[in-house]
Amino acid sequence: MAKKRKNPFEDPFVSDRLPAAEDDMNLAGMPGLDLAALAPLAAGLTDQEGMMLFSMLGHMVESGITPEKYTSFYNVYQKLRPMIMPDMPSGKSKGSKKTKDSSIGSHLKDKTLLLKIQMKGVVKPPMWREVEVPADMTFLDLHHVIQCVVGLENSHLWQFNGTAYDDWLLIGIQSTGPLDPGLEDVTDKAEITPLFDYLDEVGAKLEYVYDFGDDWVFTVTVKKILDKKTEYPVCTAFKSELNAIEDTGGPWSYVEQRENLADWKKLKKKEKEEIADRSWFDSPEDYYDMLQSNLFNLDAVNQRLKTF
Image (cartoon, rainbow, N blue to C red; front, side, top):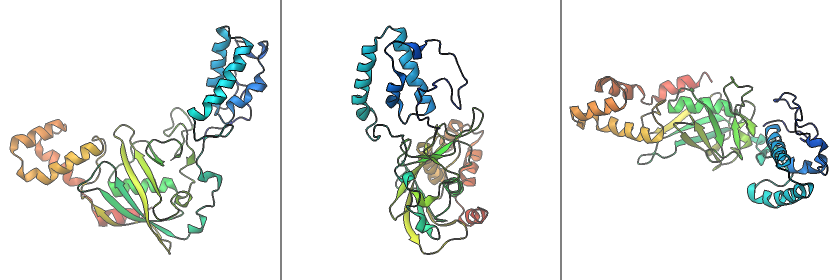
């Protein structure tokens, strides 16, 4: 999570990310504007959010807003804040509930979780894999396990949420700079957060989002907690033989690919040519070979998981 300042108004032009700058609007010298008194407005905000609020105040100054209207603005903001951010108590920073007590699931550190990893949006039949993993495995390691068992290639950004794209809980790798791949902000660092912090009981679930364009979403659910600690992840069962295929359009495309694979021998030559052309393949044979090369192989997957 981005670093917090106790009082963003103490020195709003200096932060870890933003270079020092001149206070061209001379906010600190504005009569009737007590920056220290306005500090509660920014309680719990990140540096970036504090700067946005400070900029908004600057525009108010340039527009000739009076000190009396500053006070009115503050009062209205405090009333609106619960409606804008209903789950965030005034003066508290955004964060997941369980990060307040990192020991909630620590009793599971010597246990094994049986997880069901199921693709959302795909039914009749569903697409899922079941895998046993150490309960103290990190979410970064779980990301790699999911990539392995569903057939993806770790080429895009990803995150774990309570529900997809919900930033109330956002477990992932935080970017350290403009050229560093990763998420702009996280609530929990995937490389150090153990699974038992959130997947701590049977029925507990999160959603894993991969490739924010194709939008692969998988529900991760605890099916069992085993009284042992597995040495390495093991895939124990699966449904739907076709893997997810990188850069092909996400779950909606997966359903079409699976239907094409099942019906291939029934399709006419022209239909196969149209499918291959739509999918940017030179020939129907190339397209069919691509589908065949992405079939799930339990033995091969478990051999790979032994290296994790």
